[in-house]
Image: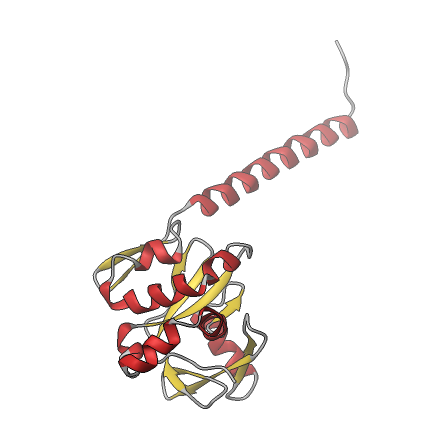
Amino acid sequence: MIKMDFNNKLFLYVVAFSITCISFSQNKYLDSDATVRTSVLEATTIYSNKTLIENLSPIDNYSQFIKAFTTSQLEKELNSYEMYTIFVPSNEAFSKYSRKELDSLFSDKNFLKNIFSFHVILGRVDKNAIEKAIKINHGTARFKTLNGQEITFRKDGETLIIVGNNGSKSKIFPTNFFHKNGFFHIVTEVLLPK
């Protein structure tokens, strides 16, 4: 029979405890990572394990955005990034443009890509992160967009506002929808870069 002194026993207990903790923390991480988060947008369930387009396609109010996003081929580029946050204009935002302006917009893939890459921030940026940045920066926060330009955020009372480089302003509501590669938020305007 092997005799173990106190130090050897203590060492074995520490090793066993460490292995148990590592195993538990890995399982916890995997379980939380595998959890599908859901929310509801216009009576449609949004799933964190679906792509942006898969989530928005069933909702008629985002058909113009889907058309623009698909035409610009921005989705292919975004698939190369692990996480991104996108500000999605509804059909109401597009309705502020004439049919002629929309036809012109949809006929130029590069112009569309420039506009909608201005609606993208790399990483997961939720409403809370934007509001914290506004508070830290005394009322204004700027984030770099995928097209390289900065976009500005402010609060107007309790309303979160996003400002384009040409001065266009949009309310951000509703917010914090997960998609497979990050977050999306709804905006009331199509934001225009310089």
